[in-house]
Amino acid sequence: NAGVTQTPKFQVLKTGQSMTLQCAQDMNHEYMSWYRQDPGMGLRLIHYSVGAGITDQGEVPNGYNVSRSTTEDFPLRLLSAAPSQTSVYFCASTGGLAYGYTFGSGTRLTVV
Amino acid sequence: KNEVEQSPQNLTAQEGEFITINCSYSVGISALHWLQQHPGGGIVSLFMLSSGKKKHGRLIATINIQEKHSSLHITASHPRDSAVYICAGTGNQFYFGTGTSLTVIP
Image (cartoon, rainbow over all chains, first blue to last red; front, side, top):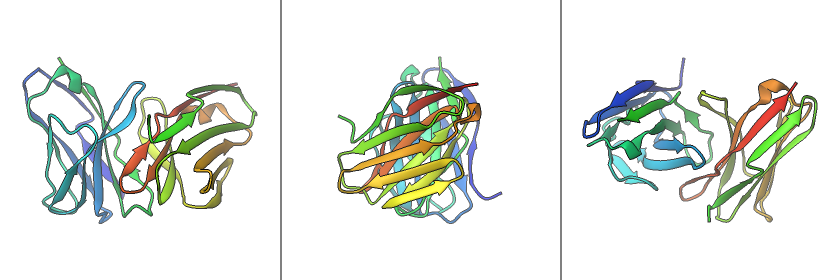
């Protein structure tokens, strides 16, 4: 089925560990983005990309890196995990600002 | 102040009631999105609109560009409508409201 695939669904990390959250879409969407969702704060934009080779920071980029080597993939890297990064992470894609979003199923990350 | 404000934050309704969730925005946007998130679940796009009104089943979304306001209506509400409803605007970037948590009681 066409859509956005996020892996893993759940992850527990120790403080200081690094990891990569994977996001892939098969709809040929140019725009992809990563959000974190925390209780009472809604969705906050971490990083986004408007096409292969182009990335930019969102509202809360510190502690995260991204790259966009292909249209399909947009991985999010946690460089040195901190308890403040405990959250639910969503990846989303869209064909453009005039189109709807498609969201991945989310990754629940706990940093201990 | 958030660029997109939703009200109410929490809403409880009896099954069958007509429900309205409001969204106001303070930035220029090209489109307004309504998203639905079920407890523990993913996020689904319900509507994207830039003018007027859209209807899908029991859900109706309206937008008033001049007043920078949108509403999501649910007619004949049902317990399965219980979810968080999120308003989001797309302009130079994407702006999200903090969501309205709806509980429909049988």
